[in-house]
Image (cartoon, rainbow, N blue to C red; front, side, top):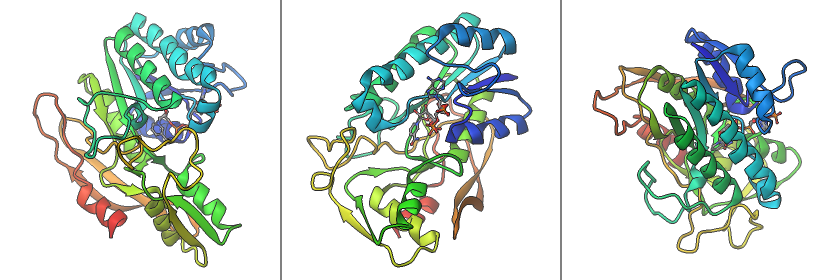
Length: 321
Ligand SMILES: NC(=O)c1ccc[n+]([C@@H]2O[C@H](COP(=O)([O-])OP(=O)(O)OC[C@H]3O[C@@H](n4cnc5c(N)ncnc54)[C@H](OP(=O)(O)O)[C@@H]3O)[C@@H](O)[C@H]2O)c1
């Protein structure tokens, strides 16, 4: 297939493109920063030009304005990129009647539910990032018949800025890190997500999927484990509650619980054959990943509801031990 990937320079895009190529696809990684043929998703004409040039058979739309705090400060820009930009992509993919995978977020939920969210739960975003991504979901569903909406959470990987990398940076200059302990989520490796997206693309099982690594932890536990695995010593990680820390405007505690909008948990779905997944994790001193475990996910042949990545016991032992 000829696959156009938006957000090619993002942390997900940079893991996704080589994986697609390995799977035999011809890939065009679109970025607004390209010297030649840049693609700005808020500019309809620039998308049309790239579609005409590349003639894709499918699109994976990973570009987004992902700075949650900035989305709160500048909601117009959040909606311009995440909603209008997605409308542009979905309109063109819909016109061409080609499959579109839209990468969305657990921030479409309010975090009030005490158990993991499923694809059937009602959305209720609490901030502009979540609301603008949800608007994008609606555009995709309305405009593109062959659509996948893949909601994920707490992405991290080797590329770009993410939470573990930020913690490692801060640990170089501080003796104490205060980290929110009352927000729970499922950290998800970009390579694992990319693998599921590649598999989804090969299917025709369109619909909405929750795609996160199984297991859960708080930001505090995530920070602790990051420093531990990176071999960082002499830095105290202190847990704080959202209400007593300096919560960013984009991550208010929910009225009825101490969990954050990011407590969506994994029910990644896929159903054709068997998939091999690797669990990646940090190794000491450098932020790169290495395969620690490889195992087979048995997929059901069930008609589409969902299947679970059978990673929970293994990841849980990392997070919660
Ligand atoms: N990061 C997370 O924890 C997380 C969690 C849940 C869901 N998601 C979703 O997963 C997807 C991938 O996230 P990520 O972490 O890979 O994000 P990222 O590293 O911030 O990358 C996003 C990419 O989108 C591009 N982009 C932003 N605005 C654009 C515009 N107007 N026109 C064209 N390109 C634009 C950026 O381009 P530049 O490189 O030029 O800035 C960047 O390369 C996003 O849809 C995000 O909403 C992320």
